[in-house]
Image (cartoon, rainbow, N blue to C red):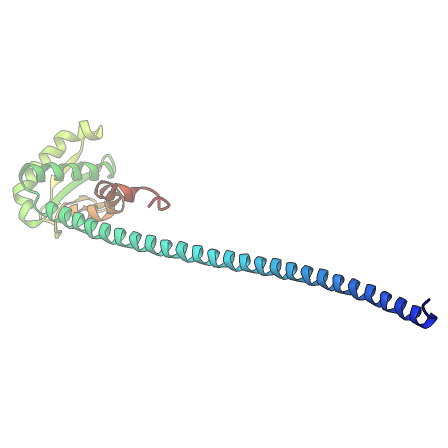
Length: 216
C-alpha cells in the first residue's frame, strides 16, 4: 500500500502531466491557427500585389495605346493639311489661268450676283482689271444686261466704267452715285469659301477624316 506522500506525489504528477498535455495541444492548435492566418494573409497580400501590378500594367498599356493613337491622329492631320494646301494652291493657280469662255462665264456669274446685292433701280458701272477691261468689258456688260431679267427677275442698268479697276482679278461694280461698291475677286472669294470647301476636299481626299474624332 502506497504511502500518503507517494500517492500525493503521483496525483500531483498526473495532474501536471494532464495540464502539460493540454498546454501542448493548445500551443499546437494556436500554432496551427497562426500558420493558417499567416498563410491566408500572405496569400491575400500576394493577390493584392498581383492585382496592383496587373492594374499598373493595364494603365501603362492604355496610356501607350492612347499616345500611339494621338501620334497617328497628328500624323494624319498633318498629311491632310499638306494635301489641302496643295488643293488650295492648285485652285488658286487655276483661277489665275481662267481665259476665253470660262473667264467670260465666271465674270458673268460674279456680275449678276453682285447686281443682286445692288439697289434694284441703281445705275451701275462695271470695271475689270486693266488687261481685260477693254477686251472683255463691252461684251460682259451686254451679257449682263441681256441675262438680268431672267436671272435677277428685273432689268439692270449697267455700263462699262471709263477706266479699268486696280484689281488682280474679278470685277468691280459701283453705283453712279457712289453709294454702293462691290469688289468681287476670284481668289478672294476662294479664300472666303475655303473653310467650307476644305471640308468637302478633306472628305474626298481622306474619307475617314470626315468622321467624328471618336472614330477619327
